[in-house]
Amino acid sequence: MKFGNSHQIVVAVTGASGAIYARQLIQKLHLIQEQWSKLAIVMTDNAREVWRTELGDESYKEYEHLLVSNRDFSAAFASGSGNYQTMIIIPCSMGTLGRIASGTSSDLITRAADVVLKERRKLICVVRETPYHLVHIRNMETVTLAGGIICPATPSYYSLPKNVEEVAATVVDRVLNLAGFSIRTFRWGK
Image (cartoon, rainbow, N blue to C red; front, side, top):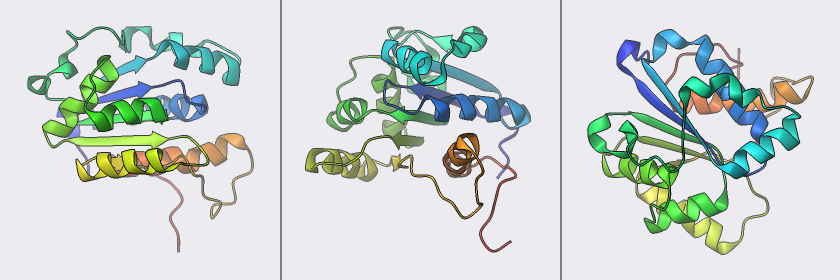
């Protein structure tokens, strides 16, 4: 499915481990710019810290022009009238998932997720935790029943990835497929 120039997307980055997934997703979205019209990025303070720790840099600052404060409830996607069709939370902490599941809109990320669900649009939560306890599982069930997609950051190895970047790409490419973007990636049986 190709969206054309009217598709608007929000990428939210929380403080769960897995900054590599967020970086790759943003980079790959820039490679397919013709498939979307607007991209907004929201990061928690913890996400910035995890990014610096895991990736050893502050390359998220390259996207300053797209960054929206997690406290900015006046952002267009904080309302259904903003018409953002897709929200990807990558990585999605279990705390964020729990707040979404309980309907607690305490910051822009949880408010935007609430909007996406109430408007019956696409919410993809790339959860990054292991192991899960029963509360995690029930929160995943609640978000799924509300229309969200839970996509654990579980890599695949069919494509025989050669390094960490390629392993992470197996998750990111799956997320892009779930979001409906047309990308070139490994396909089983080809």
